[in-house]
Image 1: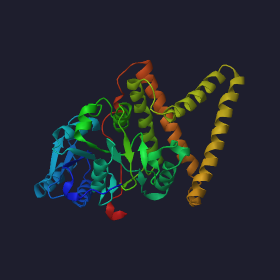
Image 2: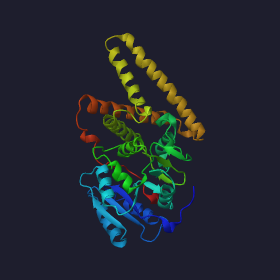
Image 3: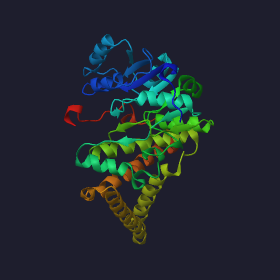
Image 4: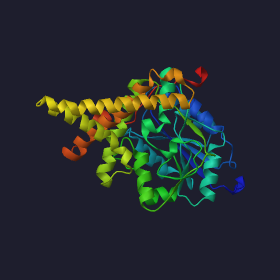
Length: 357
């Protein structure tokens, strides 16, 4: 890919949604301010805050007072899609880069995004979902995250892949492209990125993944956090399915088929003992699969010490997504009810500070 001289770069806007990020917002802003410059004054930074009450807003105001490129916008709805749309509408840049407070970025992240978008024919660009982790469980979650045994054959989980994909983490677009698409769907508290990229690709536009665009995502570091995260993913993917009438990929419906078949076998077994053979066979096959998957993951990454918890890790990915999907199916397709409050709003999670890495 040809390089574009920095002095020809278009003006860009970085947008970051936050809520109660007192422990991380300074580190996040420092990392954005440390980015390799495009040209002087070429980047503005919009922090969209969900009316934080932990001191986050005071920190943002202090940075904004010291750096004219930083502005804070309010997101009283505390829904991420609403905050992102607020920032996009207010953005002065012709190019929009979404970033996240819980991700580390290479110093050339912004420059590489803008270059890639400028010289390619894609309407959205981004990098792979590289990962870092904390703790024993966190590392097991990270290893599983990059395996098809946990999440299926997802291209953006492959750090070295370069080419067209169906989605990328965060993303970089021309503002005009986002306005043409109608921005993020504000009815989604999760999966808003997935749904936006689904509309983009189904409209004939393309998403390009480049290994030169590097960031490091921190997966959950406990089974409880992982289960909650993927149950929400499964739930909101069915809201997307309700809107678009068909899944973006078959991998999104495999977990619910598994959970539904298992529950159906148990239910029938309550009335006729002969039907207990169904859940027995399903669980036996599943146990064999996750044990084989655990061996493959641990051997391929030379991390055998994580084998004792790898089957549990894989089960959290699968059961959480499947259960969330089943609840979503009931809410959105059967009961036709609004999303449950417990699945709405911006979510928070813990992360060890940079000083403790």
